Length: 183
Image (cartoon, rainbow, N blue to C red; front, side):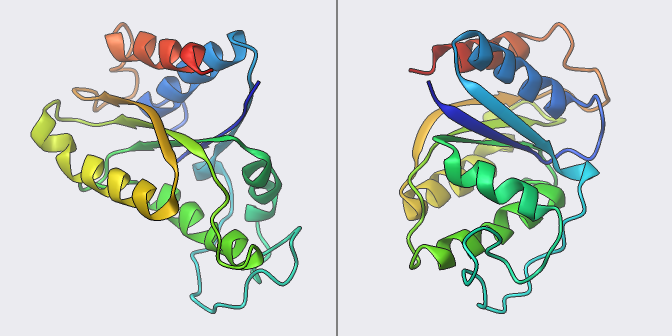
């Protein structure tokens, strides 16, 4: 059984990214895994200050005290990290990037060692082409290489702009199957 954390970077309740994350979580839960999702658009998380003062308190590693304190213990206990975000200007949403940057404080608390993780990428986007997803795929792959994390799969759902566009699309079943396939 894996402990899974999903950071949902979509600011839209009921949006396509949230539905992708929900489908993935259903599959993972059915397979016996534990899943906890954080909807970042509903949390109060300030951007990283770049102060390099984190890591002094392992339970609350960042000097800023906000809703990241809910995420830190779940992140540390997680075996698998899910990057769930809509595509914004060929990258992650600001909500996702803000929270992800703040995880640097955990690395500071661990002597600048990243905790080992497996990970999954779930992304919804307006355009549906390999060219459209190429910048995010390159960034994701580079990030995993630098972190020393292992990719366990991706669901890139193009052609979904408006809330609910993903309904009935194969990407939802792909996400559920990906969650269910985790060993």
